Image (cartoon, rainbow, N blue to C red; front, top):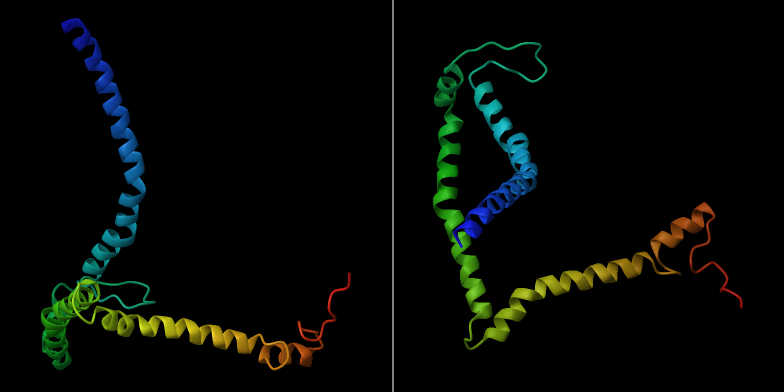
Length: 166
């Protein structure tokens, strides 16, 4: 019995190696996308913050913390920072809590659930109806603007073409 266990161990180890290679091969595109699309541009922006780089300039010089000192002297920066902190501290959690409350009203077994669903989904449905009506008008064979433009150019649209013969 111990021989069977010992002979099975290398096969299991080889299978694990193959699984690890497969996992790395499947994860590699995501890792590369993370590096190329997120990590490298972030690092480049951090490095450029310490230079006098301007778009289109042939060269740039290392200026250290001068950009940040200028930023702290700017009157608009303090207001922008206050707005950002307010947004992060109040608006974002409020939006999430409001969305959660709406979801609970729609899905909960409370009285008026049907009303909440109708009020919530009415804009979605009405937009679809409005888009269908606009499309029907634009492509109408006799009064649609698309067919009018085609007639002006000398092309018979669906209304101007004779019916197919059998």
